[in-house]
Amino acid sequence: MVSARNLINRFRKDERGAVAATYALAIIPLVAMAGVGMDYARLMGMDSELQNGADQAALAAATQLDGKSGACSRAATAAVSLVSNLSLLASGNSAVTVPSETTCDATGQVRFYRDKAKTQPANSDATARYVEVDVNAKTVDYALLPVTGLISGDTLDATAFAGLGSAICRVPPLMMCSPDATQPFDAAGKRGMGVQMTGQGGNSWAPGDFGFLEVGQGQLSDLVDALALDIGALKCAPIDGGTDPETGNAQILFSAINTRFDIGDGNGGQLSVCSTGACPPARNVVKDVVKQTSATNPNSCRLNNNAWELPAVGRRFRPGTGTGTEPRTASFDEDGIIDAIGLSRDLCHYNSYGVNCSSQNGGLSNRFGSKQWAIAEYFTKNHGTGIPATLPGGVNATRYQVYRWEIDNNVIPHDIAAGSGRQYGRPICLPGTSTIDRRVLTIAVVKNCAAIRGGSTAVEVDEWVDMFLVEPIVDDSTEVANGRIRDGVYMEVIREAAVGGGAGNPTPQAIRKDVPYLIE
Image (cartoon, rainbow, N blue to C red):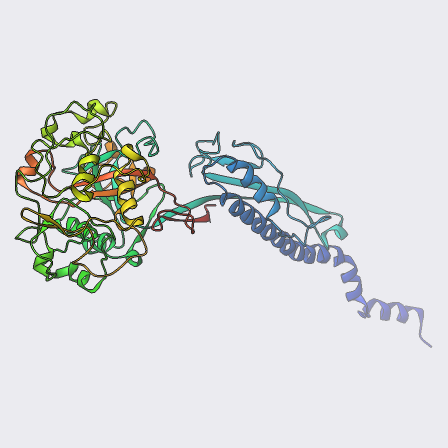
């Protein structure tokens, strides 16, 4: 028989069941530790869900920041309605939501800014360039921590900041310094104005200077390809600038532009590809140079050396002294002898005319003309008629309107006898055809030229403008004496470029690509 003392000793030494007591004492901290791990994972999961929602809301909003009327309202609506993200770990309604705030300002949960640094709040649709979105806060639905009585949930929100990166594509990389950096260029108001663009010299840029924007790897060969080859080789440039200008103006770049007038360089080299149809001329290449024969060997398609050349001095179009107030129907040539006349530059860009362009264009740089050109003499020489009644614009027609009228009515002046050659308005030298109008170029009008030093400062684009190539680039000492600048590109303002793309775009090379991107 076991004594009471033995039973007490046996109980005292028996360790069976001791672990249960330990677990009973440790269960609460163990649950708390497991809850922290599991619910922290849930917390991080909900943070990711909310951040994804904020990212998508900001990106959706940024797609609407096109600077046009209603941009901020459309951006806020896009953020609200296009976000379909869910937060499955949140308490209550799982949808990730954004408040509807359509005002162009930097307050609330949908904020608009002018700059990436967020130092300049937007105050209009035009200045809203970037958007920051806070999604509505949500509470995580914890699984284990509430058991401990320590915490039942946590509230999280998320923020995203986005902008719209835009590029204009399929354009030759040309830029021109604005005549007045303090004012918008206003292509509509300058429609028909002739522009005398000259290459930039030295480290300073002046109104009317033109240059080339950096494309590809920034090599000369990239620029030549973009200027001479057909649409497939044209590059994209940021729509608001941000790319560097190229300094220096190699002669091959002017030869590349002249291919659009059916003029080959005759020297082989990089432009030898033009003989294969890679550099198609425009359909209408009427110009003020003549050709001795219709032969199309390389040397007969280059400038000068008895190939394409200006008529003899005294047989070119040369206006006499004028006042700038003559009617468009007037005769301007000083002696009435004209072998060939193209869609010539503005009269005030001829020294012989004697009228300063600046006095005719409201005080702009002399590089910008007065819209007055010898339209009546053009029709007399090239069509043997007066200004036709069917011509859009009539006596006030622009050079581009005349050019298009000739194409549309199949009356391009061609093979016209001249005293020292023949004038050809249809291509006879360079092969190939293009889907775009090769005498229309989309130019970046740059507003920060005064700040550009060499090619180290990125350009800021005020407006993209469609411009018509008026004359080929011809260097001739007698013409230089009469106002034709050396290495000068003569153009006429057509319109603000339509950069939306699509079938309704009148300039197929000007296609805009907008890509929203997250900044933070």
